[in-house]
Image (tube, rainbow, N blue to C red):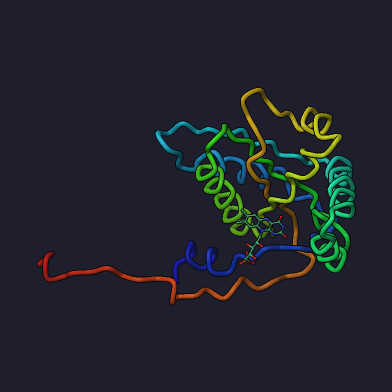
Length: 188
Ligand SMILES: Cc1cc2nc3c(=O)[nH]c(=O)nc-3n(C[C@H](O)[C@H](O)[C@H](O)COP(=O)(O)O)c2cc1C
């Protein structure tokens, strides 16, 4: 297996980060990998905000957990309480991907580039859709302002990045979901 395929195969969603802040050099490399992503018509319909502010991430975490605790269905809140009570798993860094409306596929590609780049640099990561919650809460406008939301851009997804405290295993790939629709005789 080559190095790229090995990194793809070994990547896992990290849900426990230690207190170390990743080196700025690594974060810059990951940010560059993010904007190297392909996009439809090369529109690059994104903004990448690299939030390296534990206090800010912590405040958004508390807000998000509070929103979940008040939801009619408590199952999501309980799942996060079982995982340690933190929506963002103590991550020291959040790559926030803002997108233009309708750019979900482009955003998804950026998030995977970030995750793969992080793994290649020895860092853990988890794509985190739950980061939407604080931005949509009653204090959302303040969080958006602090995170540098720009006019015409909305929350896309986030990727939490840091050194893994606990190593995980990736999900078992299900090859039964793959079909090859082939007809080699036509090619020869
Ligand atoms: C669009 C998207 C949103 C996700 N949001 C969250 C999230 O908010 N919190 C979380 O812990 N994991 C989140 N994940 C991670 C998935 O749960 C994880 O990729 C999946 O369980 C497979 O596990 P693996 O990544 O370890 O192989 C998200 C993944 C994707 C692609």
